[in-house]
Image (cartoon, rainbow, N blue to C red; front, side, top):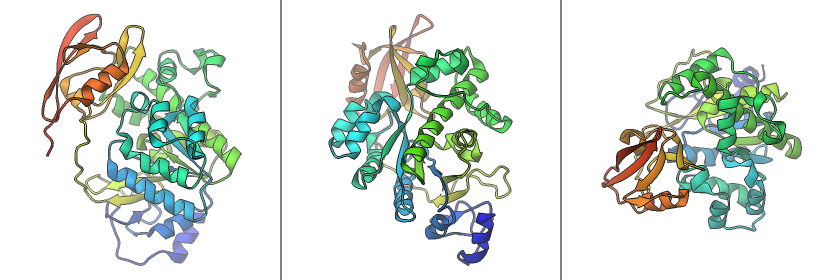
Length: 372
């Protein structure tokens, strides 16, 4: 009711625009009607939590997040910003960063950025500097991947309470979310726990971030912004659903929308409350090249815990669960050793890897694209 009343009273009267039109906002409440940033901010001024979704590897998405954070902070004024990219155990480090006690290099080192997140830090550091500049509480929303793995394999109810990091029972996924996760799971290698395990891990992950945001609302007031992957926010599933289960109803989802991304004004539920059109942007490859894997240091060695879609690793045939034995002929005993080897790899070259898969040695060649 609030949205419809405001929309009827004071939006721009430009020609209708599709949801992928660059430079304008679009809402399912007003199909084809473009909105300015100030109009969107006015419409969501009573939100408790505003989620800004992203595709992790797209620089333009992070630029949009930065500008949107600026608009939110101008009116009515953000109280805190939560980040999926940091684990809860690193909250003291973030507090020191926000307080001006750490530099950027120390922040990345002490949060073990390359081991825990893996995407180029340069994509995110402008967002971190924004919270530091404005002395906004910076909240770590994530949990260690080992705990998410346990949720997948064992289920929340079978994890001892002292190991849950205080995370409560997740609200179970509605059918639409399960279908969405099923499509994502279909693109991953089959696992022993199957789709049920994948769903258990995802809703546990969603719950952890929702509880982090809810705690920030209680401690600092509203609105609180959350920087999360778009899969955790779209269609009101994921984090919004868990927030509602926690009693926080006024949640707004904002998404960047690429012009080559299909959209349907009649889609139910809608993908977001508002989307912002982004034109194609040709990005230079990062230096050094990225392999596109997440790693865990386990007893058996450096193990691949996840693989980025459309990455060099995926094209090479690496799989979740592979244990990296050698890279470029050098034995790999720790995550930093593998990271250092990959960072030395020039663009347009091949990186030979030996992995152990189901106890058997497998040779892999990762082919890095040439820099344009």
